[in-house]
Image (cartoon, rainbow, N blue to C red):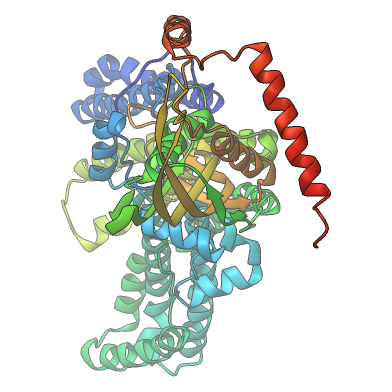
Length: 622
C-alpha cells in the first residue's frame, strides 16, 4: 500500500519500540561474543590451522548472526510510516479515489471479507470471523478455554500450537514408558534389552524437536485463515510403542550373534549420546514458553467483547422529492458528514440507484450501499498488560543469546573433536572411536541443546510480535437500502388574468421505504515492521449498537426532505425589481370601468330599494 501522506495524521505510533530495543541489545551481545573467537584466530593459527580456521568460521557465523539480529532490532525502532489509507479495508474498496490501494490489497490477499459477507453479518446479526475449530485437539483447547474462539486467528494458532507441543510431549513420554516396559521385561528379546533404550531415547528427542519445529513454522505461515489441529493418534502411537520394539528385538536376536564383549562394545557406542539431558532441557524450555505466553493469552481472552448488535431504522415516508435527489443527498451530504479526518469512506457496495419510469409520470426506484468510515484508533481497553509483554520480549531475546552461547561451545567442541581425532595415530578403528566417545557425547548434547533453545527463542519471538503488533480500531459500518414508487403531477400559480407573473411546476411525489442498519465495529489488525506495516487482514472482533449515530443519520435525511421547495419562486433581487416594474406597467395600462355620475347612481339606488320592497311585500290577490 502506498504511503499516502497527509497533514492530518491518524495518530498510529510504532508499537515495536521496546521489543526492538531489547532485540538490538541482544544482537550487540552476540557481536561481542563473536569477538572472542575472532581475537584468538592469529594465536590459534600458530598452534593449529584447524583451531585457527575453526575460530575464524565460528566467529564469522556469530558476527553475521549478531549483525543481522541488531539490524532487525534497529529496523523495528525506525519511523513507522503510516499514510492516510491504512489500515486494510474489510472488503474490496470501490471508492474511486482509492483504486490503486484497493487493487494492491486484493493482490496481497489482505481482504478478510467481501461485500456479500458484510451484508450477511449485518442482516443476520452474526460475526463470521469466529469460526468453529477444526480438528480434535483444536476442539479440546477451545472447550477448555471457550473465549479462545473470540480471539483473532494468530492468537488461536499460537494457543493451538502450544497445546500441540504439550500434548505431543506427554503422548511421546507415555509411548516411551510403554516401550521401556516392553524392552525391560524382555518381551523384545535379549539384544533389544541391551541396545534399544538409548536408540529409543534418541528417537524420542528427534520426534519432539521435529514436532516443535513444525509448530513454529505453522505459527508464522498463515494468519488469515483458521488452521486445523488434529493432534496425534494415541492408539497408533501406543501400538507402535509396543509392536516396534518387539519386532526389532526378534530380528536383532536373529541377525546379530554377538559375544558378551562385543555386545558391551556396541552398547558403549550406542550410549555415546544420552538424550535425557536434552530431554530435560526441552521440557524446561517448553515450560518457560508456556508460562511466558499463556498468561498473555488469558489476559487477552478476558478482554473479548463478542457482541453482534446493530441499530436499525425502517419507516415509510411520503415526501415531495425526486428519488435521484434523495440518493444524491445521502451520498454527497449525509455520508460525507460521517468522514473521519476527511478521509474518504470505504465503499464496499456502491450506490447505483435504479429508476424504472412508467407511463403517466409514474415509476419505481431502488438502491442500496455498504460503507465503512475511516477506522480510528480504539482505546487501550483491549491491549494486553505491558509488564507481561515486556517479560515475553526479555525471555525471547535472552533465549536467543543463550542459544548463541550454546552454539559457540558446540562449535568449539566440534573443533576440539576434529583436532583430537586427527591426532590419533591408528586412524579410524573401534578402539580409537571408543577413545573419543566422551567428546562426541558432549558435542551431540550441546548440538541438541542449541537447537532446542534456538527453536524456543523463535517461538517466543513470534508470540511477542503478535502481542506487540495487535492494534485495535473503531469504525462505523452502514448498510442502507431504499425502495419505493413515485408519481409526477403539474400545478401552476399566478394564472389569473390580473397576475403579471406565473409559475408552472412539476411535483414528484415519492413513497420511500428506507432500511438503514448501522453498527460500531471493533476491529483488530497485526502490524509489522517495514513497508507492509499495516497491510495484513483486519478482523472484526465486535459489533456494537450505535443508536445515537443512527439517529443523527436519520435526522439529516428527514431535515433534507422537510426542507424541500416544491414551487419555483424568484429569489434574486434584480428579478424581483423587474417583476415589480412589469406589475406597475400592467396596472397603468389595464382598462378601467366607465365612471357613473352621482344622480344616476342615486336613481339606481332608489330603484333597487323599491324592487326590494316589492319582493318583501307582494300585492294581495283580488
